[in-house]
Length: 377
Image 1 (tube, rainbow, N blue to C red):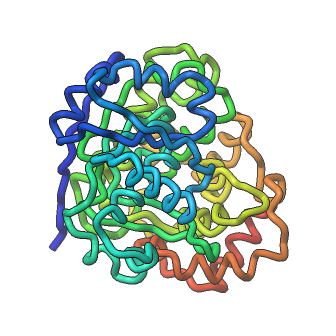
Image 2: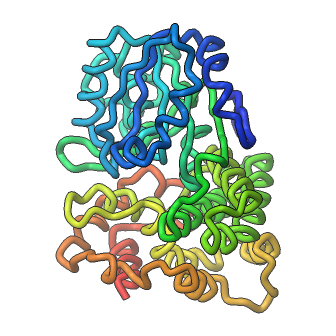
């Protein structure tokens, strides 16, 4: 029997960020910790958010979120939260600040270590509703973490694990496409393909959840219809609106589970060197995984092609390969700097990743080794 839950409140449109003060009050936040990264702070986007917070609401700022959020950064932000006597978090940025804020929200009133709350260790049952309130404000259109129940965090020992619970869902999401105007072409392409990967993987997941499947289908239609426009012109307001909606819809579908694309990208993204962007990884490994899953998804590839506006005879993996190139993304993992030496360890980690359980075709360490080798080019 499927469990279907959609529990958060979303403010979505140009200018939505102006509602931050009333939304904070609605969830009981009076002394927020703003969680972001140095890039968002330096480019002035954080200021665009904070200028709408009432003067009576003192804000502490943690801008030390790394590209792939870590346990160490979670603990640093938690210390800032406690030192400033905060009572909630406002995450501003891409998936990394939002996921880091979720990690802090867990540890505010849950005993450490963080590891015990990971999905692969049965941690969902340990995350009670006694978590600090989070308001998520995305500044990219890709992860959809603002409405997601999961957070991906790299532990101090290098393992990149998922922390998934309905209690992790931000209490409010404020999606203002204005904050994504002018996002660089490369980042627009990479985060956009992250949204595409989310929609594709949740759609073909074998878990039964027709509402989530329908949302994934519509999210994919929007993403493929507007990603090229968003990449070509960072000021295209309609394209930015549609891509933010597509990203949000992809994450709304996470309850169906993801698959081998994410099982591979999670451990690769946890490496210290080279530092690899999650959305780019998803785009690059997707063709190999689509070939691997073919024959195990019924008619879903045909339906995916309908959503993407493709002819029935188009080879879906080849199309994604060509589309990545069209967007200016790397051709393979080798071009991203992934060394051959890490393939065995990454393959073993992929088999253990929580997303492996919902891939349409069961995959072993050997399967993942073959998939990564194919994606190496």
